[in-house]
Length: 357
Ligand code: ZN
Ligand code: ZN
View 1 (cartoon, rainbow, N blue to C red):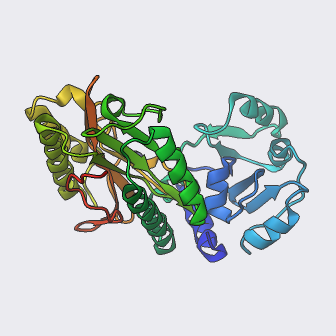
View 2 (view 1 turned 30 degrees about the horizontal axis):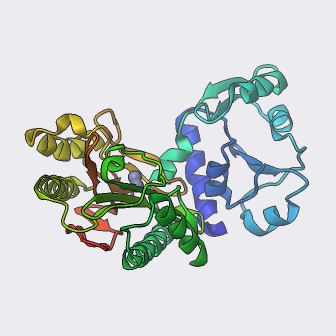
């Protein structure tokens, strides 16, 4: 997050704050603070609107000096930031109701001057975060490329005979060696374990002829990637192959529905209908995709319950799956950038069923 990019974000947020008829927005979520100001410390907050002020405590003067852009005033603050911030606000003040704890809100209420109205102001920063600028797209693409490299490395070493946990751990280490960190603990789920969409890697050895759901991402320079491939340790048999082809076809169809202006629920319905027609509707129990950025799960959502519309510059996953309890699972997940007329994929791995040792 460069200082110049962050300055533009503060100005854009100030516009949204005005449009909500707020005098100020208190941004207390650290990821949102980082997005706006560039600050990467563990205690920070900002006020955006009539003024643009960044607050951190005495531990971070140098970090704030180096990271926080010119456009931010930096008043002195106590270690506990909220009461001091609360004392300087006036008028209608928005707060991040999805992020602030009940306890923090209580402290805020106690400390604000008489006449201040505290207004839940939801996800204003998240709305900005959902549309990525070119610098962010570059970082996400780099994180995705790094994870692809780790996938290739892992496949080369083989999966059969190793435990899910060994494979997952080795990948975490490899991601670290390449200068990144995992964006979430990798999922390696073989055979019946693959039927649990959020399986935890276990100690059972991966056997020949099993499908292996492998979900992994890297975080590089703050930005996340997310990708799933399902591999087979040798020929998995007719029904597993058929299910794989169904999910593959559904995933390609979902990708063709991705473009600026499409509704999140419409994109979700495309693979869902195909999987339903094949008789597995009840076996696809999660949304089709989610936004990815500073967090691995953010807006917009591609799901039946989503009210989000896709916009140019969104980065979303497209990840239908079919999970047959006690037997196996298949999920194929790409990370894509939404464009005016479609999408640009950031996931470089083949989606043909790949047999590995
Ligand atoms: Zn994933
Ligand atoms: Zn995902």
